[in-house]
Length: 299
Ligand code: HSE
Image (cartoon, rainbow, N blue to C red):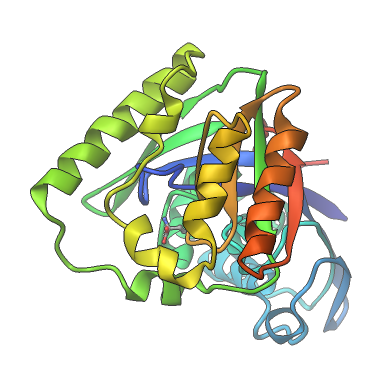
């Protein structure tokens, strides 16, 4: 039996579109065993029937098969047990966790034929973006860079006092839909603002200097366009900041909104975000999380 645990992730962090990401202490656990024949998938926790119940549609199984194919290996049969705490289709990297957990369990099952770097590269190919896959694999706060088709990354360890509050709306927003409103080109002033803010944010988090994170987490590129999908978006950001959040932004492609706080402030910020969403007619689940420093691992 091979068991792997992959964390949820929050991508973009405001200005770092398709670049910055952070692993969170909320997990997808996958246990896999070889069978003589057949495919058996057993679930517990958060699930989406349409994408999980048939093996052909199950992303974990697809990711496992990707690795098996690279090794020219055909399992006789598989037993896959999935225990998932990551909300699906909410901008918390559920598909990245499924792909990473699938690839890492498959690789262990065939005797670690491939390196973690190879798995990471394939996972990015399968997911389409690196900003969730990288922190899911490595843990921590990461910068992903895709250069001439190759994935490069740096990991930064955020300060231990950093807390992450996430308000998760009850509705789903697909990454595809959320990206459909983005233009092919961006005006230079917006690009310059985002570059300045992304670099400033990264340096602030690395130095543990949270003084101007609220300004650094602003974004001129995608949030102004995506907020049409999220009732109350502006009020939720505003309420989080007024309640003492260090900064707040759309989590990945949304619809969840995340806020950074220091220890002790998280409940007040979470309640403020919930009330603001409620005022816009959106019910949310509020998650109180911390950065995960480990990334995917066997247990
Ligand atoms: N950066 C992506 C987006 C998130 O905002 O569309 C998923 O990788």
